[in-house]
Length: 257
Image: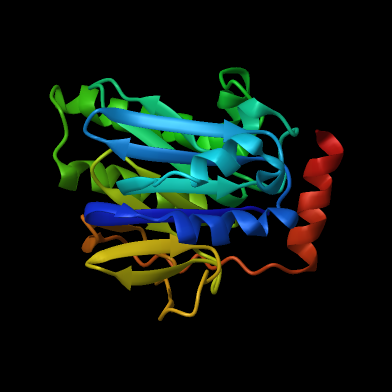
């Protein structure tokens, strides 16, 4: 699978040390790395389809302060999708109102028919990119039905319904953002943690230092703004457990690629 990293803070934070610790895990996740710094000026995405520890570009990038209040990072172990730049996370797309969504994913969509139509629309061939395209379409549909832009609460309702449906039978570990809020979801226990630091929150697939990391509450969508939890979604109880059956399904997916 992959590993996720996220930051939500009230002011810009320098996170080089944690990012270095995160990217060191690329020895087990060698198929690409990505970084997204989100600000009022837009979203800067940098990524490569090579192992993070082999990237001269990333080494140089980490030699300078990386400061942000809202940030996503990813290292990839390819399951669905070839090893290629277009399959590296983060993925980003604007909705009809111009709001830019950025998403990283750790998991596998075994069966969710609404995503099938995006196979011919996406740039790469990952299920993760299809999740983002579907998310943006759902937001656009809700905006069209309302005939105006959505409030945060209305957007959260759309996202919550989507996550509840998609998580059933699938592993859905997500960090994504609309440029203001950071949304987090896991339905696999012990696979996403958070650390409170300087009034902000750091998120990671596994703890990255000796700090007081806590397991993220799972089977519900969570929204954070400036490091604070501001909304909690439906506790859907669609718990994903890796077992023989799920691995057989994964092998079947590989065989059909």
